Amino acid sequence: MHWDWGFRTRTKRRLTIALRSVVRENSLPAGHLVTFSEVYYYHPERLESFDRPDALRILTRLHRRVRRLADDLNHAIAEHPNPPTLDQIIAQAQAEPSPLPPPTISTLGELRNITGRPLDSQYEDHPLDCPDCARLRRDPTMCGSIIFKVSRPPCVADQWPRRFTRPSEPRPS
Image 1: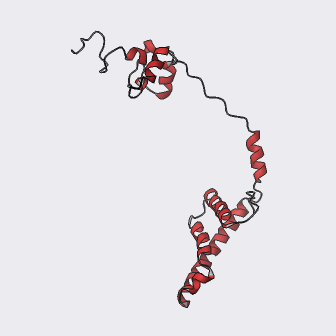
Image 2 (image 1 turned 135 degrees about the vertical axis):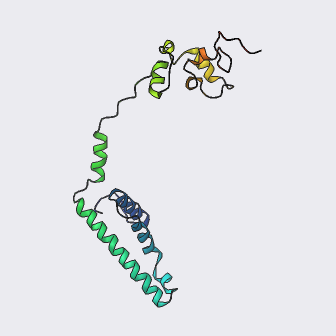
Image 3 (image 1 turned 90 degrees about the vertical axis):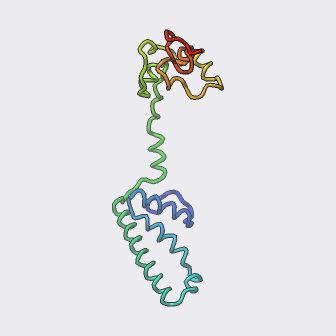
C-alpha cells in the first residue's frame, strides 16, 4: 500500500510481486520471500497434522521470521517516506524525450570501425548497400558473413578461391 503499485485487490500473487520488488530494490534478504510463502503453507489444517511440540516449534520460528520481515519492511518504508505513485512514474517516463536514433552506417569502414575489426584502407569507402555484396549475402551456399572473416568487401573477397589466396599466387589445380 505504501508504494501503491495500483493493485485494486491484495491477492497472494500480487503481494508476492510487491514483496519481490521491495526485496530487490531495497537489498532485503531473499529469505523474506520464503517466509511469506511459508505463512500461506502452514495453515491450521496443516499444523494439525504435526504433534504439538513440532507445531509450536514451527509457529515460533515462523513468528520470529515474520517479525524480521515486518521490521525490514518498516525500515524500508521509513527510508522512502514519499515514494512516487504509479501515475507519477508513468507521467515521468512519458515526459522524457525519446532517445536519438542510432547513427547510420553506410560504408564498410564505419562498420569495421564500430566492431573493432581490421580493414584494408583501400576498401574503407566501400558502400554497405553494394548490389554485389547483397547478392552474395543472399546466396544460400555461403556459410557465415565474409564481411567479418576478411577485411575486404564480400564482392571483392569472393573473387578469390575459398582459401582467400591472392590473385598473384598460382591457383591450386
